[in-house]
Length: 414
Image (cartoon, rainbow, N blue to C red; front, top):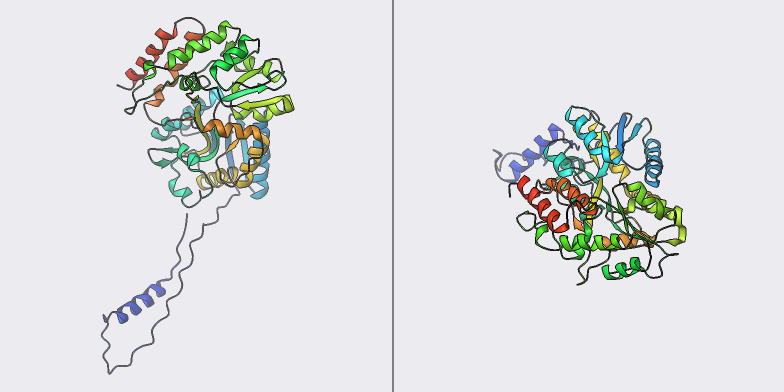
């Protein structure tokens, strides 16, 4: 919020000067001419100071005991030190409950003042009026945020969040078990065939990027699902071939992550949210590379999502929530997020010195930028069910992929 201060008397003096200069007054040559008034310099626009001596409720879905949660705890303490009188009540909500819980409470007029989450459901929330539009509040305050970060917080040209970091899936590996990390699907197949173990979390998000390795696309130019036109069936059959060699697949995230963290398995595809924890677990034995390219060199296309801070339109401390969101994503906080939680920064004034984070940056160059369209809203359920059916051998890829695409197109009226 900004104010322009220009006293009424200054306006009268300026008008008098303009009229005289343009010949619009009644002064004649014989009459003495009044001295020209000196217009006062307008007061520069400055942000109105926000009274931060309030209580704010903040939700997050960082895993309990994780480096992400510890980092946020540090940043919250920093914020309360920077703003004397500010109290921040923090609630951790399990990730698989976050979006439903927020939607239910915000729709009923409640919910937190601020929450941090990926932009998975941003389009739906924005169209439902469950997150506040921030264009006016953020005007002139996003100079050091990257365009990718800003774009990830926009729906239909309107800004609905403050960007915090980028996230996508890459391939973690244990350097004590892997001499040379695979860069192609053929190389990964040969490694697993030779006895190097890999685990997979089964879900529409984690498995998405493999379709790109085989040339698969989700949408055409008209936002019609075209997964049934190539690439997806091939990717699914490839993953099944790894399963036949002994690769493990499960919808239990913790069960698939645990053996990698214990140093028992060679590979584990996952995102940067766990990087700092894996560095603690494996130390110098931790490596990261992009998901492997396909047989014809097509790169993997993992979802490229943006995490951000969102303001609840029900908040009674809207201005303070915006200020806190800007503080928690500012240069100092973003550097801490990067250094201690392994986040991929979306600011141009943050320094990345960790080569593992840099590998995620490389992987992001071929990531599939998550759409915020109404059509994309109908992706998660049919494709989540599709992967479960394929991995559990309920349906073949040749049946399950077209069925998921048809369900998505039907839901979108395509």
